[in-house]
Length: 141
Image 1: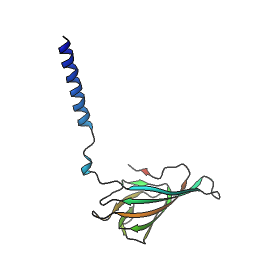
Image 2: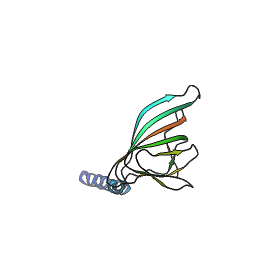
Image 3: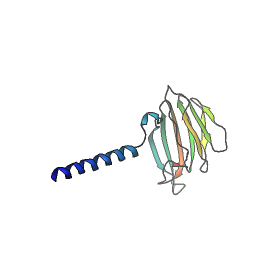
Image 4: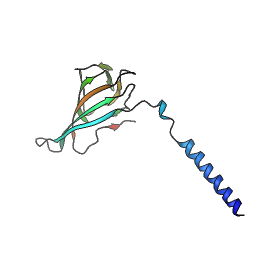
């Protein structure tokens, strides 16, 4: 009887592991690499209560692609290295190289954000003027 209970428990555990494995997300080999975001500074704007300036750098590894999102902020982009492709809902995609800039308004939906290269990284600086305590970005379904 004890052996039967042990066998039943092992079968239950094995079936649970199989279900967990089937529910696991697909291998990350097919998922593009994610951007690395580093905060450089954050500063409350006393002349504009409830607003702050946030300066970040973003590094796109080769092949990196952003999901569709919005910032609910004024976003000023300056490319430092490599080449990036940016696009807003209703607008044309643009390819930017070092020294070029891009702007997103608080109501814009960022539909395209990616590294233009599959072999070289890209790096850019972003200055966000946003509401304090708001996230840097929000995904758009």
